[in-house]
Amino acid sequence: MLMWQRMAFSSPPQPFHRISQQTSSPTTAKSQFSKKSRNATYLSEQSPTCEEDTKLKETDFQPKSIKDPVNPAYESHTESVYSVVSEWLESIDSSTPTESNDLVSTQLTSSALNMFNREDANAFAMPPAPASAVSGVSVGNAASELSARSAASSKSAKRLVQDRSYRSLNLVSHNIRLRQPHEEIPEYIARLINEIRQDRVSPEPSLDSIRQDSALAKLEWAASSESEVEKYFSTKVFPDPDPNESLQRTDRHPMAPHTIPKVATSNYKLATPVPDILYGYNRDMAFPRHTVHLLATETESIANSQDLIYPFFDIEFKGEDGSLWEGTNQCLAGSASCVNMVEALNDRLEESKNNKVQPIDSAAFSVTMSGTEARLFVTWKENNKYSMAKVESFLLQSPDHYLKFRKLLRNILDWGRNRRLSEIKGVLDVIFEGDGGRSGASERVKSREPPFDGSSLRKGKRLRVRE
Image 1: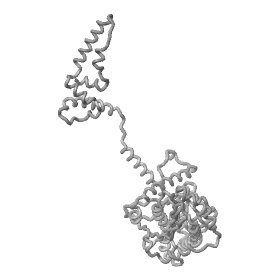
Image 2: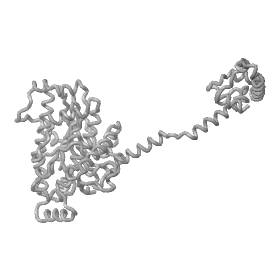
Image 3: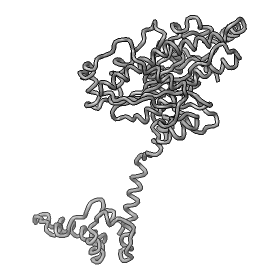
Image 4: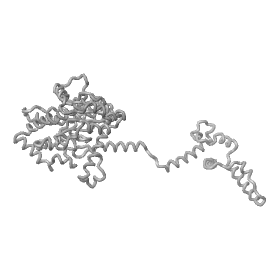
């Protein structure tokens, strides 16, 4: 019985009527008769009984019948069929390579997390070391290495800031919060906002020129991507200072971990800020007489691997499919990091017990924007907490709003170029004035091996971050 059932699944037997209809010549009648006798004998031994044959025809060998028996009436017959098929399937499964989607997914996730959490010896965000790192990376590869590091850090931060609880848990646990519109702001912040709202003397584009700007209009009706929004505004609104200017701009570079204000007892992680545009100072042009002073502060003054000094303006772009809510989260951490850097200098002033100058106005500005809307924020530190408030919103497709937005941005850059920079220089002079201060600064420089300057990072070298 078992052998017949195996044959039934491999190749069906010839019907009886075909055997009976075969013809033969007289010369072969005897041999044909012998063959018929042998076939009849074989079939009689291997064929099921009439009752069993009827039951098998009823099932018609459909796959749906090959399952655990439910009706006891068929159990004696189907159990053996089920065993045969089960053995056959098991033999196939054992020879077929298996895949585990869960295992692959877990491995990929783990690799991705490890990639985005790696840091170099100087605590700058970086991706996994490439294969070439085994034999050493030349200085000529520094640019591509920094670009890869920036992209990796950017992806890691993006995933975190998209979380709906990032603002209410992660940021708040590190004393960074967005103030409500009805909350009052400090008087000195109100004065600063009035300062950047002043009219400018320099000529500005006309309303008619904004109305006829087809590239600006396209940002709205073409549902432009983030890169298209960035390309337009980074040239039309946000200037790129010349190398001989005191201001410096960096694009898409992660801020160093030591710049980010963190509460050691918090269990929530902060995303590393990777501003699309970040304005600060050019070391050589902004501080030509304070090189030793900046070296004495070690890396407190350095914002990123591009040797940007004491930044004050963070810009975050979004496409039409992006979220300004997410951009606001990015502004919260980025601008708080800018404030934190200057506050470290104010702490040095307080430690010096010198009252010749007032502490630096450590406020910083930030913008998150798409092709149709922009939101301008100001951030400051008060009672060991970082607060960010919205200054104003702008509808960028409206010529009036566009020009007002442009005016405020230019005034912020002028504020950073003039009053803020002057305050920083004044505090550096007071902290390190006299032989004691200068000697201490010199000793710090001598103790560093090898010494570094603003060009060290640009050549791909990195600095040790003071813990």
